[in-house]
Every structure is written in C-alpha cells, then in structure tokens.
Image (cartoon, rainbow, N blue to C red; front, top):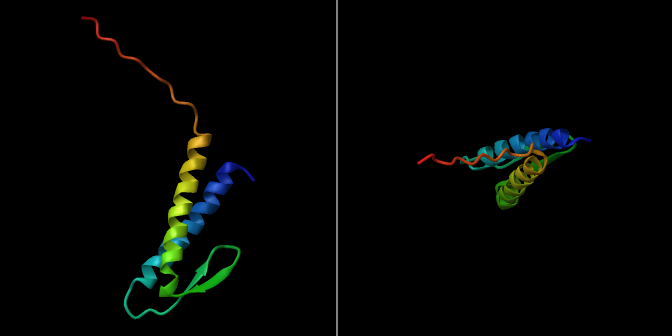
Length: 82
C-alpha cells in the first residue's frame, strides 16, 4: 500500500469521525453508526472523548506522512544589491 493510499484511507476515516462527532453533539441523539469502511461501530455521546482524540491523532498522522513524502523544498536566498 502506497503512502497516498494510506492518506486516502485516513481521510475517509476522518470524514466518518467528523460526522459522528457532529451528530453526537446535537441534542437528543443517543447513538450513531460509525462506518470506517472495514467495520461498523455504534457510538454514543459517552464515546465523544475517544472520537475526538482519535480525530486529533489521525490529523497528526496525516500531516506526518505528508511531510515525510513531500518533495524537497527549494531554498532561495534574496540578497539586496545596496
């Protein structure tokens, strides 16, 4: 699996986590079916701290993978002629 595939799959899970967090923070909703693409879990408002932490971890993982695999930056030095 390439790093692009890992990023793509992570963003799908991130989208599902965002939906679950949004739905569970609304009043009156007791549960949400979280579909990660491989499994389905029923989550409740009691699971919100775990979902929020997982979302944070996933964002950090995506940023780390993108930083490791980004093309090298080209450095330019500007020197004034005065």
